[in-house]
Length: 229
Image (tube, rainbow, N blue to C red; front, side):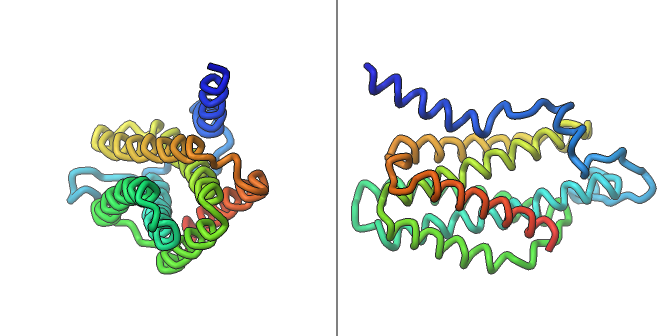
């Protein structure tokens, strides 16, 4: 019973890093991108079904650009881990399941790129190669370190999707509801991966805290770069 309570508390702590961090109003007050929108120029999206202001489109453009790169990296991280750990049938099944979900996320983001007239980041190939290297290296350090990698990445990505949802909440276009639901679904599945990683010993890895913070902070740098390049 004590083990189960400890396990539940561990998962709750992991999710608390991602969920309920800031209120919508509090987040908006400190977000430099959420200036008062200026309706001087417009951009038609969704095959003309919706017209966004230039500022609204710029915000969504940043979101989708970095989402596509992030999901690209996520797919290749799992591919890299499978290249090292795939000999274990149980681990291969687990990693394949998470990779397949990331492939679906990437397909969704590829569609968003077209639907919302978004310029992909020039760092897309870097995201693919960097993700694979991270997957291989983390797996070479052992199964628990591979799970630490997953926990760190999904923690940062979950926070990232949450931030986007708070921003999108302020846009009242009915046509954006599907985009919001899609991002929420991707966020929820990333959090499932986080829980899975913790459940499979992520926090028992050697130098866990150092590995976790290094990877999470690296993700933050990648997000910043992909939004702008």
